[in-house]
Length: 226
Ligand SMILES: *Cc1c(COP(=O)(O)O)cnc(C)c1O
Image (cartoon, rainbow, N blue to C red; front, top):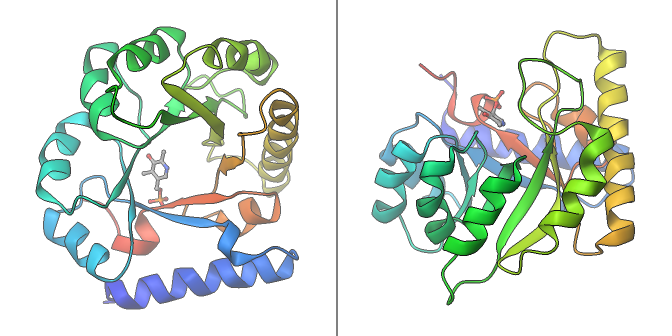
């Protein structure tokens, strides 16, 4: 069974290779360890091996993990967020990848501690127009972004997507290319938008080819989830 050190090395090699193939610098692609359902011991092991960015999907898990793990971890919330559970995220997380409702944004903005830096936010885009997925429609991105930019305790840093899984490679590639185009559009009104969160275990190379700056990796890092 592959070990965590082996998996990390392999992932770093994959990122480096994908960047080299596309004339990109590997330091511009962040590896986010998607740690949902993983034990505290696993996260600590990944931390000891040098990983600092962790992604969680459930507030209930985050409530246990965040206080118990090292203080210099950079926490990313990547799952759907209910409006009655925003406070813990506002007070403890550094990034939110799944912003797609103004009401949630307003609550986070109110609840973000005065002493904390603004919460880094990514607008989740439903790029494949998939009825089962959250995220806003690409055509509504700019209008939504304008509203987010009014909130002083949020910092709009870019876009995130989870494309439809069951589609052809060509359609997936089209989705990724469209995301890159949307980020260029967003940068016209917001030069802080430097982040494109796309690519998971199965498609990170293709995402990097299309400008991803952050790959969210669970399975190929920690193994299959139970
Ligand atoms: C679980 C999850 C991932 C990780 O997916 P893997 O295929 O296990 O790498 C990435 N992004 C989001 C939003 C997830 O929920």
